[in-house]
Length: 354
Image 1: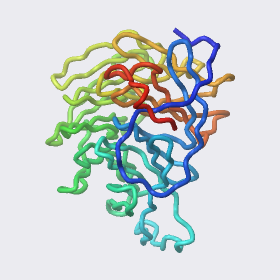
Image 2: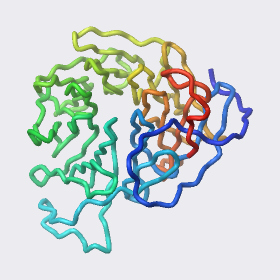
Image 3: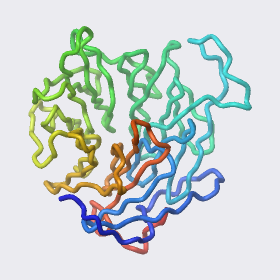
């Protein structure tokens, strides 16, 4: 049910993180968090989040710069090296200016993928990222696994990249253009495909570790979208097709997930099965569902135009971007349950304030 309007101000807290080295940076502000009667805590983030890993490390961007956030410390990631941009045939401006670059996802290993028109791979918070270019075309990475397999699109084509084999273009269904968006540690890749001609309905797409493609038609006639919100360790995909949320397993079976609001878009799926998303029937309210229990996540009053969840980790910590007056704001939210991690109770002494 929706949270009531009564609030209690407390100190913000986040799950305990890893011991990765950090760049020297001034501590981020420690905003107040708000506990609502449904026991969800919301705190502000001073940047636009893009993803979170199971250690609670969050990546994103602010002022066209990639950042990393853990236990209240905001760290600017090193920019990519200056280089000649082949597609534009111009020299990147001199060192007084860095072109825009952002972080888009973080693996549980702590490695980060980002983008500046090429794919960027940070394996350290203090070292210049590896630049991954493909034939001078724009590369848009979307996800990374613990083996550093990166997936996304390159020049409009779905790809996977590995340290061993480099870029590999992934095939799509006939007469469809595929987009790769999620990957698991076993090498299964998920995405969607749009018709090359016309504005027809999307297909849900999966590639197995060998690169073989399979696809699934939408379940609902409402809205054309049919996109994965997440992929689990087995390679099963969670997706929303209009007003129906379902799991498409690697065996080809389809299971409808009950309890999801309608109309809605799902945006994430944790390793323990927590689903996140937001309604689209006029109010754009963020929500989360675990084992049939639905919670609408607390928003500010008055509410933003849209708070879009973009990541959830094993503990159930959720991050979201903010949109107001049709503008993407340079800030976001983090929500966590006040008393429990999805893995079990949270010990108060282990919490770290942002």
